[in-house]
Image (tube, rainbow, N blue to C red; front, side, top):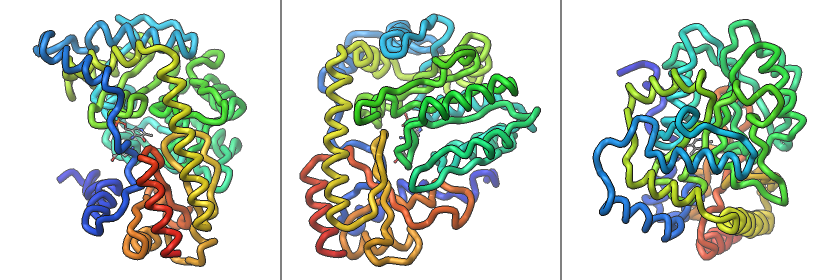
Length: 382
Ligand code: PMP
Ligand code: GLN
């Protein structure tokens, strides 16, 4: 097969899912809710499935969803978006990321990525012939090293990929950091690709600030959202891209040749979801924050060194306070066998070997009884 994909095998999330099943462990690994998203959204999709066309929708997406994405941008971030020209619906954020990278990066272009990074970023950058330039953030504070970031820009840089809120470290980039990134992008004429799938998962009264809203960034930023995260419907795989027409043209070409178009009924469901009142979005954030607080307290009681979780579905923990000095992959294996609980080793998100290997990621978008049981098991084992 293509050597680009040879080293990976199946994803760390699937590896851990299989181990969870094999050991009948509680799965706090993969970022997936254990209850489905709102019934009214699923009903809207079901109605569309039975009552509306099931033939190819337009390449960019059904008009109702294009409008809903534009309206969502206006409502939450005061971004004016032309639904006909500046929105594209994709098969999850994963396809959206691939469309943007394949559409905008030519062989030899440099792409700045920030470690820890989500698993699909690097293979697609390489597939496009891009040259990855990695800048690393590390625990416990995950602060952006501005000097290193500035040094990563060159006259070959085409794209910088920013994931805020950030998986797996639950960092929300500060306005100061985003402002610095914006300055660099403008100075070097670089496009920012913003993976904002966790845009409605920011906690403790924070608000999500898209890089697209920073001065000079409107037409050099591509913003990605995902219904999987915003509506707890990860299996639907509906993502959406917002970008100015100039950037959108080549992105649409990539989408045309990879996928062409996305199942219409689910698009109608997501359009319904994005049009829901503010109470849905506020309630969703509050529910998830309560889950975060619940798991965080439990993990502290177990004795982990628990780091701040400003956003996303995740909490990262240092396991050394429990008395283990092994690496994180080994610790996850011990935890499955001894405690019957699955987490994700944070080193899986780093290219640089040995950079960070004493941290594990727990997912809290789970029912409280599952988290309670996981905590009880860990208290007994450690
Ligand atoms: N980006 C990040 C940071 C993610 O955590 C995920 C997975 N949850 C994705 C993209 C992929 O999202 P989707 O399931 O919509 O493809
Ligand atoms: N984004 C999810 C996570 O980080 C996983 C999605 C996947 O399995 N690829 O846990």
